[in-house]
Length: 410
Image (tube, rainbow, N blue to C red; front, side, top):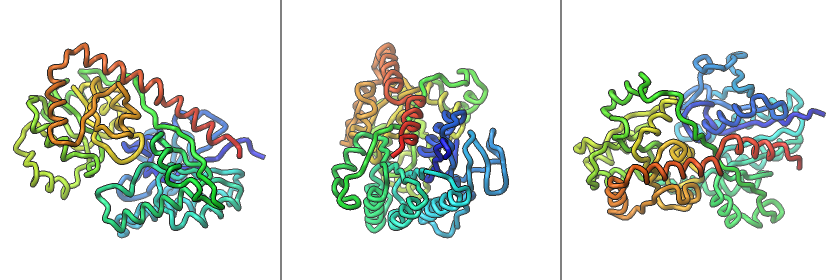
């Protein structure tokens, strides 16, 4: 009997590109790559948005067209029909789970774990769960946040997400929640509603972040060129990093920034959705304000860390979901962090950040207030934020907790 615990990861599009699950899998496999007790198998998209090209990934060892090794993880590529539109994600997770079952059968892997990130395949999870259990395996789940609350979804899609979440929590052996508030929500919603009236088994393991400085110097050519191209100056801009979706409250942050008296620029690092952008412009007319700067995406992690370090303040408007990786990275790098006051953000930031409400005037007043903040007070917030990350969200600690969860035999 093998002492190696095989863990199959489903839900991330790739490893190493910027995104919550992608960053998580990249870090988890990196910290465990020399650990002989855990063997990772990672599903990656073979085509379409967010796919991973192993030939263009430093450190990847290509086995064949479908398989490669990265961080000692065995990665398998899943082709996705692009004509499916938004249903691609459901197809991707389902196809990945079926491929996991094939690998487990073919290689006769004992006591495998399939770890699913987010709740997309609820209608199929019952028979997938039973198929894996017949092979001696277990299903672990990261339920993510309240996907069914996201403003971008039409009511029928929200109903699907809620149904899918209920099914996936029912048919999992362990729900790993990245937020204490999400763990509380899972029990409040689903206790007594599992198989045979059982309550879900859960544990809390957050995402991680780093507090080290960027490997790039302040005068690094890449950083200086980026500043020049975007019309920005060191410490002369505020920053937003995140997905360009309504529930991240871009409209509120841009409107309030325009209403403030600050002379700094607001650098917004995001993947722009043109329809949403045009809709924002029609309501806010932000293009008339030279302070509002959409600067595209940045996938170079060291450059992004340097950009965070040199921001005057970071703005975080996420209100749906658990522990957000972008928030953790900001607390680890940016001296001053201004967060929307919802439970997920205050759970993470505690007293190491300042908070604003969605009500008109709240954020603008806070921007004006921090404009006059003494530098030593701003620096003190930065030190407190880094201490918060070291205390509760360091990657070595997170990786150790995951190993314990995976290797804990039922």
